[in-house]
Amino acid sequence: MRIGVFLLAAGFPGISAEQALRAALDYGVAAEDAGFDDVFMAEHHFMPYGTCPSALTFAALLAGRTRSIGVGTAVTVLSTAHPVAVAEQAAMLDVLTGGRFTLGVGRGGPWVDLEVFGTGMAGLSRRAFAEALDVLCAWGSRDAVSFDGEFHRFRQVPVVPRGGPRMLVACTSPESLRMAADRGLPMLLGMHADDVEKAAMVRIYGAPAPHTSVVVAQVAPSRSQGVSLLRQAMPTWLRPGLAAHVRYDGGSAPMRDPDDYAEHLTTIHPVGPASYCAERILESRLATGIEHVLLFVEGGGPEHTLANIRSLGSSVLPLLRAAA
Image 1: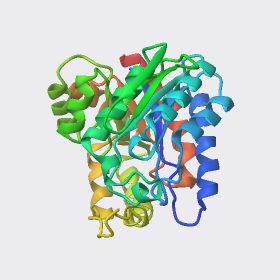
Image 2 (image 1 turned 45 degrees about the vertical axis):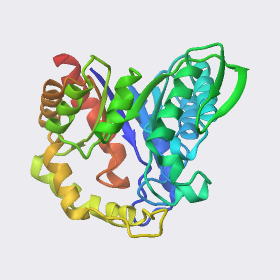
Image 3 (image 1 turned 135 degrees about the vertical axis):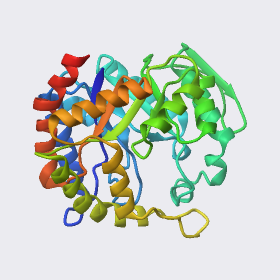
């Protein structure tokens, strides 16, 4: 198994975005010290749900602060970025980290980001996302690339530097799943989905691939104490974070109930004593066939996150390594 950490730089009440980002960098360094295999950062714009607007920039800084741990994006949003710019930065990180970097990409949503970055709803379309994936795949496999598509047209240019980072595609629908499968790109499956849903996605994908699964993980003396902590802490971040999603068309975005969502996450994910957490992660591995797991560690709030990372590293990782 490969066990990593998933970070949002979550904007909990009482801390600024700047504090959240600096803390997330410390979490990434702590994850290496704790023995994790990799750290992935999410990307969001204009909201406290996640305060990192450039997962690529964060990955570069974390790579410079660490020695051997893998770093990745989960995800870089392609609807607000030119795929060649993303490809060049990913190639540079692959080269400079000696292969430690993984590029996770996603389609994004119908948010105000599309207005600010000037891509509009056309940039969110299935055709635009598929084309961006094709540009990225070409850039990672050739010495020179030209493109003549609906959204991107350019003459042949050399690929400099010539890197080949691993790629993942965030899949939340059958449509994104098919686009990933058609290109042989592994899936990144989010923490909102349970094992049954993830196993179904893997079956539909068909061919074997090194998919990645995100789960919430919180070590606590008992399951009831861990669940209580997350029930109290997570809604204080989820409520303003989910409400900050502003639609491109000016309409109101449907919002999950923060308390219900926190309850759902504590029900389906490893929350409790180390032995329980390890058991649930191994059960999920057996149910889904996914060997790469990213643990979301910030759910208990900033005052508990570093301790959670250290506890997962000292008490859960050894159990997982022994079982694997």
